[in-house]
Image (cartoon, rainbow, N blue to C red; front, top):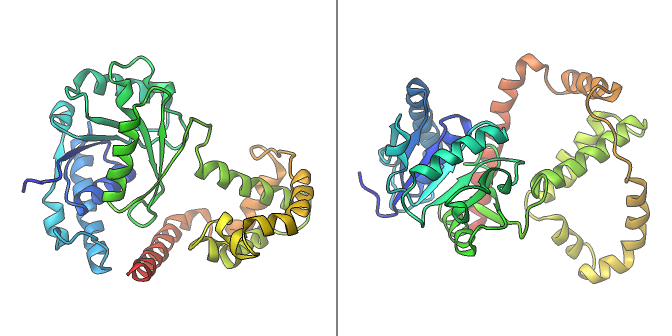
Length: 320
């Protein structure tokens, strides 16, 4: 089955590689999934079909031209030859381990093999800025980070991070592709350590950590504040829109509450140690007792993904 939208290459057939494959074939792109381990590719193809069938069952295939999981799956091809995988691809998504030396090696290989000056070379890295592994490449202007959130077929955010030398047209085309496959891209205007999601996430983690370490509350209470409080409205609107709606607009909110926010945030400036700390053991024990023991984490992850799937179905209905 040939695709009118074009060919994409997915480098790495692990969890994120499989998810990208699902997103692209669901949207009608022809997908070549590459890995050095042929058995892993074979297993990934089976996993992709299962994910597509699950999406079909929930009405989340999201493409009028792709009417079934089987039809979408026909667009995915396993591949053990990286040159074959990327030949003629309009977009390449790398999904190797979070290690800058590995990224450099993979991108040097892609740089030597890619023939088209229009092909986008994207990385799924969650924290390594693209300038660290693309600076010496011939095709560096085509390189960019497109960082998804796990699991990408239920959590649509993608962080787009250009290097200083990435062409603006590459940024624009990457955004367009992400929107076309049903994702919600955000674009960084410049490189910053941790990107957007992790910087915001880590700020929440650090404040929760301080509150527990200072004896203000329990780890379970921090999680309850998010899951039964902030998280409910944050699943539909961000903090700025929340501020906007909780007063007569942002200016009114800042006038009414700005001084108090500034005073509280001055108290929050001290960073705390997470590794090798007594607090780490306290939080770990609390999570094991109140949430789930370590040996049952995989079962809990399955529960999480089911809840995210239900939320995705709900939000898709709200958009109609």
